[in-house]
Length: 358
Image (tube, rainbow, N blue to C red; front, side, top):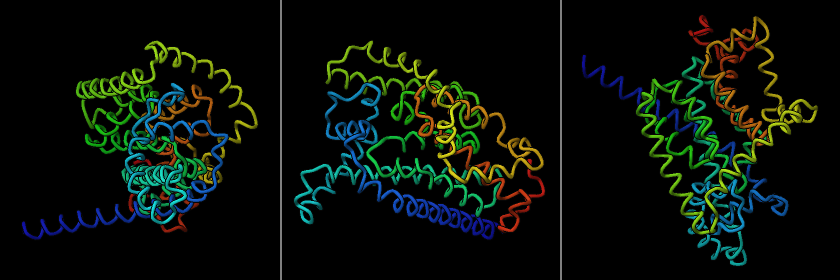
């Protein structure tokens, strides 16, 4: 009897890993193909962000805006990946080896791998919400085919890591995974300074994964590490300590601009462009009351959307920051495909469909 139970457990574990590997490879394939054109043909002459992160990957911090120069994780990993890439370039395309091409390819590889990881976590969050595997895959693909996914994966940017942080946070809160939460807390301050707005959400909604005293201790360690990195960089560029505070306060000026933009036709179009026509699936939720479909997301989902709105207002870049809502969007999308009568023809209905509010 015990042998039989152990066999079933081992079989389920193997099947689970195979499923996750297949989903991750699918996410990689979708991202790598769609972002390749962006990687090859993007015009860097008008993009200060991408030029800044390329400079950081080369170890050059002078002249980089204070808004970006502390986000070192992705540029550092890209620099490490670029070295073997450069050796290959030297043999195949010697004229490109001394240019930015190896570094640009490294960013493309790193961002694609990281963003695919975020997609896998969103797939897992969809399953935890009761959605069928097929619906969860479709939801993941809807998120990873966004224009912002293509932009993030194909260019020398660091947004992929921050989306991974949000995906880790939402997954940790839903699954109770202390490992996911620890990774979220350690990576968050290194990904972007605005992680400070996500930290309170974690302390309240991720208590199942880790009690708040332990979270606070880990936040202190993570904050100290981030401060050490900032201090080292400030020493390299000769920047005064108060410059960071002044830069943070300057972002408050973006709120008025963001609100005006959000209430304009152009702003609404920017919001629509985050997930494009996949927004239309959510319209089906109006039948029978949208609250019925939102209820399983609970207060944690609504609160996370509030955190995303704060990011949008402070940054002024509505679409780019709005993409951080992808984990919540994916779960709602997957649940509608699983439980809503309009989509039963997809064959994604499960036994749980008898209890769509579960």
